[in-house]
Length: 217
Length: 346
Image (tube, rainbow over all chains, first blue to last red; front, side):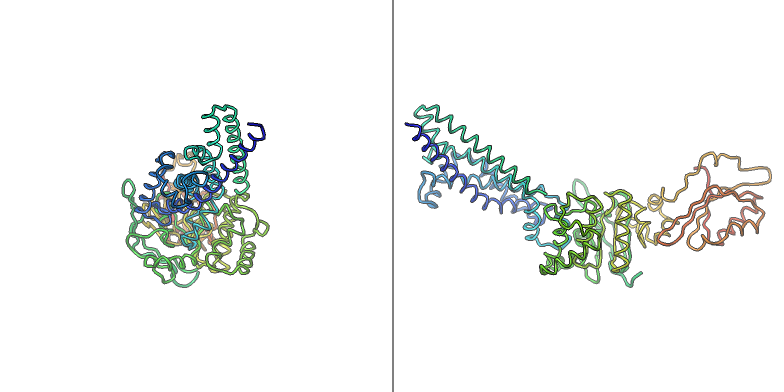
């Protein structure tokens, strides 16, 4: 394999990783955020306390979080086929990644929203805010920098998960390292992918921290 | 002072069950007249916070009723309760401003949720910024403000929807004495100009003394005493009230004074604390006493204070003379409306 071949293989893998992680993190954030909000507001002493909803949702999320990704990946295969029509390749990888990330996002959102000063929520209640107004105008804006950091945290975790894509021929950097680096014993390719992953995570984290700081007043 | 009763609490009780039962309020009855600045004083844990939160329904009493402007707050459904809260402003010890919004944004919040039009919001926000003297801080974020400025934003925010009542929850407890004074004067000003009824809770008698008309002393969830500020300050009847007043107008008497020989063969000397309230301050009661009875007076200490425009004086006087003359002199001063108290050791 020539160096141009190597570059094109690596470049393709990077794009595949970015696509997988990018789509999964966005969908997971969209689904997980309302769940995280629900977890917070239904808690005892919050704006919509409901023990039953809080407990059940918490349990479901804990179950989701405790299943090892590699098992989840196999377990959701029928669901994956139903949703995207295939269980292999980058497309097939997006579904399990998203499913795995949803409970993670819910917990991350929960902890970000819990940082909002209860006094501010009380003030909003005293002014006659509805629960929806409190969520949209108080909880989310006040926790926004934390939510951004949480989003980055999820993305970084998903980059790690996506490396297991090799199992389903999912493409991306992990797949490349597994197939070329491990199976064909190309240590150099393993190194390249690791370096690229480190740089990717580093850049993502730097961007996230910068954005969070810019957003907090 | 204004007309009828605006806020009424009838037999309000509230118990919290945490690790053990805590009865925060026990059968509390209160009448707060319209247009007054009404203080509720008590030490921490007395139930002040629970009491003030019952007024706007942030806490629901277990039993009893809370009536605000004829509306029973305990019987409102959530929608009506939210509407009622828009007519009751509240400010807090730690200000509780939205860190993500500018000063103008914070003041606009209650207007937004009340559905006020955008152009009207801007106009009202400018008005309120002017009222609290923060025109130049409209675009600052709370983090960039001092404590006093934050509380002014809190006041502007609380007044945005033109409430009838302003609840102040230890509103000056996080501020230094200077800033406390200026914030209290702003509140008194607003009370005068707009006829706004203000209910404030505090643990500091100095705050009550500065601006309140009436004060209720809360201890262990029970109202121990209610009266005009001057009354409570001058004549606290209960131990709880005495504890709160202590230090404010108490006189520290140098121990040497008490140790002086008070008795000679024929004369007796009595150390008296005299309290003059209102117009009595202006009357020559002591010289009258000296003329009428053959006693001598030695003034050891004196202090005149002003509480809500009413002068209030304390004198420490040693009166010497024949025992019966001293007794008559004391009786005379009591007749003149001066309160006397024989000071013994301590």
